[in-house]
Length: 233
Ligand code: HEM
Image (cartoon, rainbow, N blue to C red; front, side, top):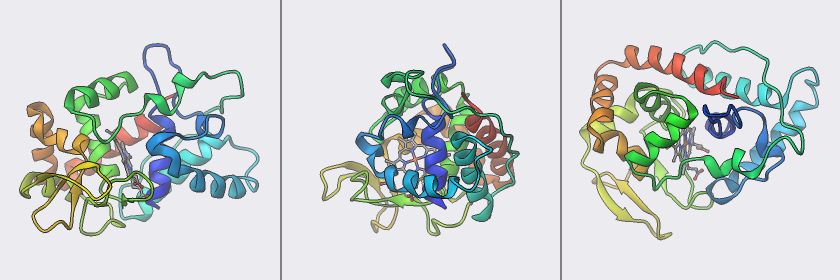
């Protein structure tokens, strides 16, 4: 489940509102994932096998659909879904339209805002999609090098990312892989530096506090923002 949510986001996250390039176009099939995104290949290969049964839709539609269903199956909202994405063909993209545009876990709030503004999302939408995405799953030392889950139940879609971000004591640590991340006091939960930006930045912080206090507001904002994100490109 979480793996599929991540695949759908990483495909969409290369979008540029400036020239309309990138976005949900299954670019990762043409440009092999690199850097922190290397670990998505297993997911892409498994999805390619399944996709053979659904020749009528594009790969980008298939990935976005899987990400939408995975949120719902985890107890999250029903996010409206529409087909119509086209896959890039070789020659239609250049390397800058792919993973190189994605944020890294080391980004500060300025870099996070710059990236999500390019994707075409507001501060509210940015906070909603990052905290919703990271309600699910975890960081794997053998994939990204970061370690640990964000929440107590990584298979359940909740607003817990925000309650923990707002209410825990976070310390900046260097993990055994040499990666800098925030851990809570008993080292059972983590935040990337880019997640902590949703607390460190005053404008992001006030939205984090709203979502920590009001789960249904978060669910409805997430629904609209995630649909928008997956329809980029
Ligand atoms: C600043 C933006 C973001 C950064 C830097 C970021 C970075 C990361 C990193 C480093 C991981 C760990 C990968 C691993 O070790 O397996 C991860 C996992 C994940 N991300 Fe993000 N992410 C961002 C935004 C998002 C968004 C917007 C979503 C979805 C709406 C999302 C969904 C996920 C999910 C579900 C996982 C867990 C995957 C698993 O358990 O296999 N992320 N992200």
